[in-house]
Length: 450
Image 1 (tube, rainbow, N blue to C red):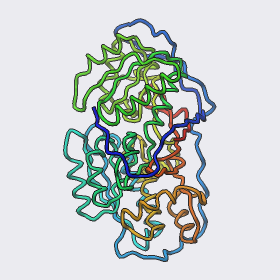
Image 2: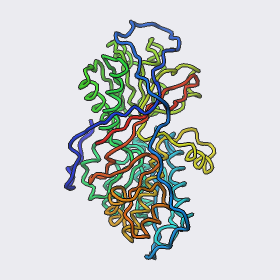
Image 3: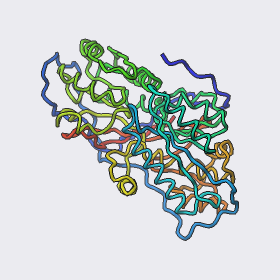
């Protein structure tokens, strides 16, 4: 089990969850299913998800001010240096490319607009690996040795837990675009840990309620036994049972495991209407075990840790009708094209918006603080995310700042307003459905507040 971190010294903490469900898109529940090699008793609750009105709806970006970006009234001798701690190896390596592309796009646009406090910002990328290795600690030491003001990453909550004290203890801002473990809300981080991905309190609430809305009365769960997996498991279960369902099977596995048959058999034996896979890329091995037992694709629900393209891993049609959740609004086409210009090999955009937003928010907070010190930047992050004039990129926002205006940055990941604990207080959760080629397609967004 994961032990809880020390209680935070921050004054304000999130104490209640209110999820406002806004169905902003189209129908989700498919009925076509792949053939199975074995059969089981049919589920007692039919899976037929609620329909919506159209895919890809989201908040529109605020118009950018016209004209040249005015120069900063304050210049710095020390340029803003960023480090990224994002996965290029390990069980979340598939998340690395879109996150790194998001960081690089943010850095490019900041520097195209003249940089921060009169100087171009710099970024150094390092691999985070996963919890089977010590790569994250080594990478963090290297980044801190280079004098970075902020570290963007890790993607994995469990990996971030191994380095958060190292980063914040050095007075450096720790900013993750993808950590979702609720544990970070109460971490004793000296006010230096922030994130653009919402806590799994929100994703779990949305997913649990959504599975009930799809008609499931009973639920089985296959869960990675780490901070991410067990945290999301807890919140999905609470929401599912609060909505009238019953979790009838919960099976854990550990990072590095390669055999999952006993857990799959135990879940199938409980005959759940639906199954939630709360995993990372182990889903490539786990999913076929369920379908071989007669579980149908629409009974399966994925999460952000495993919501990716399986077209090269599974036979066509295997996943048709399976659905999953991903924090953040759907990536807009113009944003995708900018990312592809930097990395033409991209096949997904998971957490690219959150990574891009992390760079912009850090840069804007540095401008607002007139400093490149981590603690000074952290002290301004909440201020630039709420209450002022809406803006959605560095050039438009920094123009307003340099004109003496208060700003409210809303980015590619959706509306961003931080709590005192460094968490987004509102967010979209996207719902995706797998097509015939085993690729997830956006179908619906739900909006929630913490």
